[in-house]
Length: 182
Image (cartoon, rainbow, N blue to C red):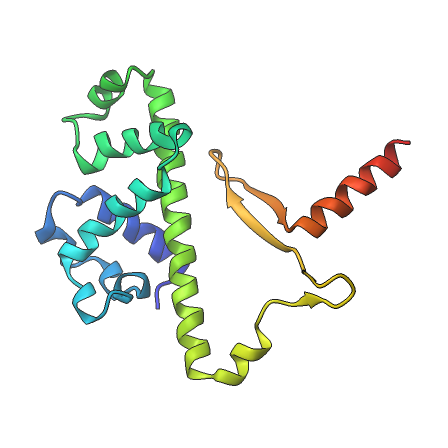
């Protein structure tokens, strides 16, 4: 199993070697669960090559995030000769290009890490069915609404921003704000 820092490093190496399948053959991600979800044939350099490109394409599908995809595309997937040339083609100042590149790589890495952790968790719960029953989402018995869960999401600056999910939690927060203001 890869540690988070090893996983992050392996993603960055895989992006740098994206166009060189022969160099991907030694990447640590070949042993990752996120890659082996497709079966035993999933642990090939060709599958590793497809993973970041396909993930980025779906992860940055909305129009607002397409700029991040275009930066990744001109840097790794269809690389310009130099990063300065990629920034020029995108019509971005070099510092903005680098900021977008960092944000794109961070979001891609974070998404793939979550997928790796989910694969590990599903593998663990498949081996231990009793744990799976106890790890199901908690349901609030009073109003039959699932409890909110906290999610940490990477921001462009690399600082984790905390966000609470769940309709019940949002309603409670809104009511709390109205009470505090009045």
